[in-house]
Length: 227
Image (cartoon, rainbow, N blue to C red):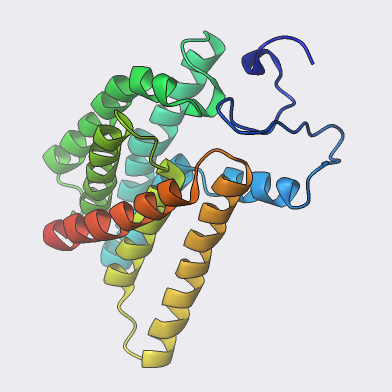
């Protein structure tokens, strides 16, 4: 197959992968690849930033909190995603930032946008939990970016695990059974995301484990400290 990976939009793989598989008309050559691509797409990091703030805003401030959360999702989720998409069209970096060098090019602009979102939320007086969840995710991205400068840690695993920590802290079910169920469901999401990234050869097992640990510990700690 000729051309570079960037010139082959039908490939659902990472350019730095050990192998390459094409997905044409929904038919895959490797078992589980289609499901891995679906899981990876559903749990994209910006998706968490769109969903979490409105939910947390609703928990602490009702409908007013939802509007704050939607604004936070726009600033910290939609705008950064659009920034990455537009620059991908210009071929400043590869689709999905799958190569470590591409991430290093995109990270400064991404951090600027996310830091601006945190500043706006705190400056405008957003509910503490809404601003705190964005700040927690920014902290995970900052530290993850520092690690990525030498080693490609999994952003998908880091952000999903951070979201897990945030939700466990924010919800704190009174019933033990409900708490166990929440942890099991969110833990399953983290495992599924880690599996998908390894299955697509975007990361090694070590990279998804480190990403998940980083997100859970750092994201949870920052959120707990700021909420």
